[in-house]
Figure (cartoon, rainbow over the protein chains, first blue to last red):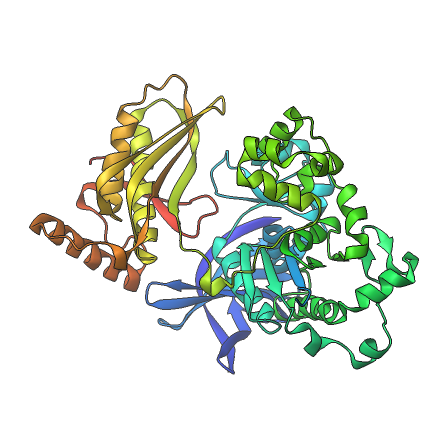
Length: 82
Length: 449
């Protein structure tokens, strides 16, 4: 299994519900990916803001997304390939 | 007095399971989680599959790869594990207000007062024990009816244990498993959770306590490590029976009060209380260490690493509002022998640069006979900020104000946004410091202080 660091800003359609946020659809490399499953989510404080991390799965694609609540920017951090 | 009911919850191969939870491709495969991106780092955790192949925590990453080429090795993410621990504590607090955090992957819960709330009414009238519960590798159905009845007293605790297992899978992830021990005290509950892994549930009662204890090695007891075990052997104490028969006098002579404590463990007696995490003891010391990328005898190189460790250590202390008055340094040589020295300073500090100055003085006094492979710094004699006398000298006051300003900026914009001018010329390179909580930035090239 290899972990490729991507660190690219991406567009995400997300759901905000009961004080939580979850990615629903995101686009990367001109491909729209629907998040089928969030395998793990966690967060950390980054200065005055919070980074939310989501390990997601989408039709064989596995990777990690980050959402910063201050900049409201979504980033595709890593892609994991077998 | 009401019999206590204590649960000990041990997350199985916690870091590795968390990584497998995040990335399904890693599931069911041998996996090692290393502490940093450095080549010579050790495995901080291994998956259940890797353990079955003999790859255990503490292996050097490259050694594990040589021994088991198919093993996947990933760099750990401390923030992930810390956050999961917070989620776990939230789950446990649904069942009791007495939750003690024993380590990042282990907690005790005292359910003495809440177990009844979770007991089935049917179970109360007519004891029924689930058949999937195992006691030291025996199925419950093989046990005598008396023991079955006794276990039914733990009905509420067993239900809580099963609910916790379900909550963990639902709220954190389906791959996360834990082993739970249930008993009347912390020592037996911990012993129980160690007996059945992974995903175990073991109940130790008065009836099966002796059978379990006598079947254990002394090294299985939490609190008897290699060194104590060796000292016990020198006293001709090789097993639990020997420990039970040992005289209080000889144990006390060798180990002090601790000797009496370990003798009580041999009988399954432990009166220690659960300390809810809100009231757990304050820190006694802070430390930071790292294994170097390559062995070195260069003091300049060692000081460069030491400076970075000190800055991170100081930042950690300040974020937790602690000051200390004793600073120490340790080195591990290539032969794995070590050096360590600490000294009390005449002032209180939480300033990374101050910590560095004192620890560098210790380093200056060391004659390096062998190459160094790892370096660490610690601050002990720590006190919460509120107990520290305020500084009066203008230069100290100014320094404190500078540090407060740096922290305020770094808190808002991220770690090491503001750095000392003396380090600006250094090339930045990101590394992860062991399994510590924070990333540090190592600087290469020039080093002035």
